[in-house]
Every structure is written in structure tokens, then in C-alpha cells.
Length: 417
Picture 1 (cartoon, one colour):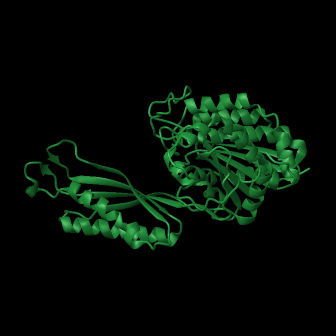
Picture 2 (spheres, helix red, strand yellow):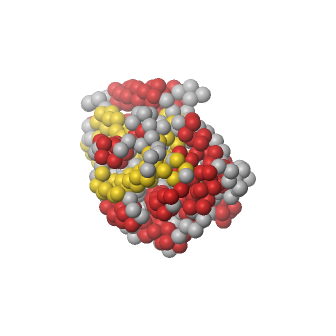
Picture 3 (cartoon, helix red, strand yellow):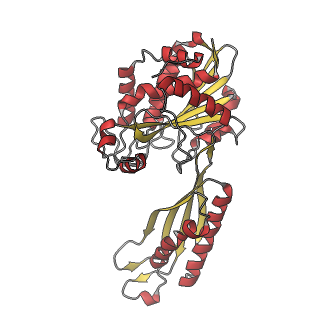
């Protein structure tokens, strides 16, 4: 830490000087052991709600399905919303941790258990220190971030009509990288994501008589290969885009040519124009390959879940980044440029009507980082377990700093007494 000059930084350091770290570590381990998939976060929501009630928040559960909202009114001043997502992933854990997931095939592989822990610690610290600030604190435990549904569902369920519309939103995310860094970007920080499903219709038959069939597996294979040219040959070199084939399914037995094949895609883009160009290219290529193969029907191309771009309000993010720099010291805050990851957090901002700041907290244990191959930060970054990996295991030493980032960020925007 550094010597803090601003009232917000000094107050944040005071309020977080004696955090109940062992208690928060126990909370984290408990959440990690009991991960819950999107819109099934009943236990997690109940745990968070209980802690908020105990800290003196007006608390509601079941918002948008399984969402939790806590409100602490503390005099005249800005209304600041702190958000953590709560859902886990359908990943079988391979971390070897003593507190590994006890739910078969479900794991907190993205750090949302850590997010809830950070939010709990920050809410409790700010409630205990309410004599140092003025305003309204809204604390949101959001479900279903992984499916892109949670934020939208909470807004549709009257989040702001029932609890008041905040003046600003704050959120953060665990990320790989050596412990002790807090990347901020004053502007675009994360990309849009779009899921696309393609069904290729063929004509099934016996594996010994392919001439009597139209094999959708072969067509799907051509599609997978040809789709790689969408980014490499149809998007300008100065634009950022990713197309991933995440799933391909067809058939039931070795000697049966199936009647259909299914392909699932995930697109990443940083502008709506690029997104639309990618979608148009996918549709054109799918229809062209199926036509070339003589498929009996045109393919079905369906656009599914979508996440918007995450674009920080410059003034808000600059203020939060500045207080983080004071609290954590020189060199801990930097602009990493936009990432290709995506979030539904911006949907809480009502199409940009509410300013927000969203940043990262690096969480890779020191020994894992040091042992990772490579000399440069990008080389090591590519080698350590990332979000969504079955080996993703954030360092417990980040619990107190992650609480401190939220507390100091909130105090930079509330009225500090």
C-alpha cells in the first residue's frame, strides 16, 4: 500500500484495516464447495442475503429469479451500486484443492464465489463504517451471468423501480495474472459475445452406402473449416474478432450416417458493425456449403444469447482507478486494453444511461505464476490456468485486496464525511 492522499483512500484503508479475513476465507471455501448453476443459486443467494441482513441492509431475495438486493440508506448523497455475479459453470473441477467442489460436474471456474466474498466483505465494512460516508449503497448479488440472462432479468423484475435507480455502478472480476494488479480501461474494456447454433440437415442411412445419403457430418466438417475464414478473410486486420466452434454433434453409432449435425459457435466482437458482418458471413457460408452438398433442406441458423460490449464511463473509471492507485501503490493500476471476454454487467446500466466502472483483480498464486513457462507477462499469462479452466484456483491472499477495491471505489463516489 501507499500513503493515501485523498479522503476516500484514507477512509478505505481505515475501514479495511481490520477485516475479518479468516471469516471471509471460510465464506469463500464454503461457496467454492457448493457451486450452483445459473438461476439455481438458491444456497448462494441465501448465504449472501443473510450476511447483508446481519450488516443492517434492507434485503430482498428472488429478484429476477435468484437475485439478491441489499440497500443501505445513509443520508443525502449519491447512490452507488456494487455488483457481484453468483453462478458457477458446468465444469468438473480438477484443481485438487482441499475445498474443491462437492457438486458433480459443477465448479466455480470463473471466480464468482470470490466475487460474492469480496462483495460481502465490502458491504459489511461500509455498513460498519457508515459514519464516514453519506449516500445510498445498493448491493446486488446477480444470478446467471454465464448465460447472459441475470442482469436483464433483475432489471425486468423492477430492480430500480423497487430499490431506486443508482447514480453509478461498480463491478470487478477475478482474472489470471500475478497477485497485486488492478487493470482498468477508461472506455472499452470487454467485448460483445454472441452465441450461434447451426443445424445441418442431411439424409441418413447405412454407413456402407454413403451414395444413398447426404452426409451432414462431412458438410459440418467443411463448415467448421470454412467458418475460420470469417475472421481471417472477412474482418479487417485492424478490427478485433473471434469465432469459436465450441460444440459439434452428430450421429449415434459407427455405421449410421445421421440425418443432421449440430454446430454451436461463439462470436466475440468490439463493434456492432463487425458483429453483423460475422453473422451475415456465417449465414451465407452455412447456406452455401449445404447447397454444395445437396442437403435436402436449408440449414437452420439461430442467434442465441448475446452480451453487449463493456464500455467504462471515462470520468467514473478514472476516479476509481485513481483511488486504487493510492490504496495499492504505483504500478498496480494499468490499462490492459480491451479484452475479448464478455459480461452482462452493462445491461444493469440501461443502454449506457447509468455510468459505470468495471475492472479486474489478478488472482494467480505467486508460486503458480513463477513456475509458469515463459519470460514475459503475455507468455506466462497464456500458461497459467484461466477463467473457465478446471484448474482455476484464485489465491486466498486476494480476499482482503478485493474487498478493499470495492470499498475504496465506492468511497470515491459516495460523499465521504
